[in-house]
Image (cartoon, rainbow, N blue to C red):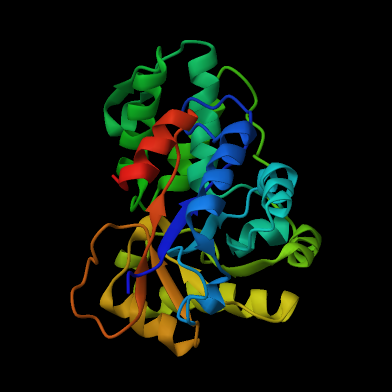
Length: 288
């Protein structure tokens, strides 16, 4: 029998964000309509249960727990009676502040709207953001430059200080929003505490990122069904620590496992992110 497909989404919004463009709600509606016709969509807990239809199984997941999930995605999921899993960055749910990658995206957007190059003398770089393409490439370049930089927060705030506008945080779901989502067949998992690169953390820091997040979710809503590795990155130590917390499902976004033959059930997800329906359709039709 064919393995279930697991799909991954992030932001659903009409907001214009060249650095990291969300899927518009109308496009998301078409995606969910298509998936509901083609697949038997099940809660993650039923991923291994017997299939009662001729349709292949699928699971719908989200990462980051943006407020726009609550605002735009949830009504569409409820419209089609589709179960889903949302992965929470628990520091964001606690204090409402945006995690570092989304903070960086919003800062880059500010430069784009004013057609101002991003200059970082300490890294000896200047990035152009005149077009959508340039902005996306600049965003990726900054992400990789800062991913494991110990002075990342300082660099980000210096870029923000020189931005043409005051950059506000992207709204994230709080615990009240999360509890409300549970009424609509949404289960919740961890996306760590502060969205770090788990593949480079030592064991103590892994326990802080994973254990604190899983524990917070369990204490707030009673159950943490999964752990999604930020950006798909993980290590052998990541798996060891994750298993210490008895999280049933571990998710990556990598097409192939980074560590072959690891003794854990690591599930690969298929990311959807295009703003236009036809591009998503082609990807879904041929799973490319």
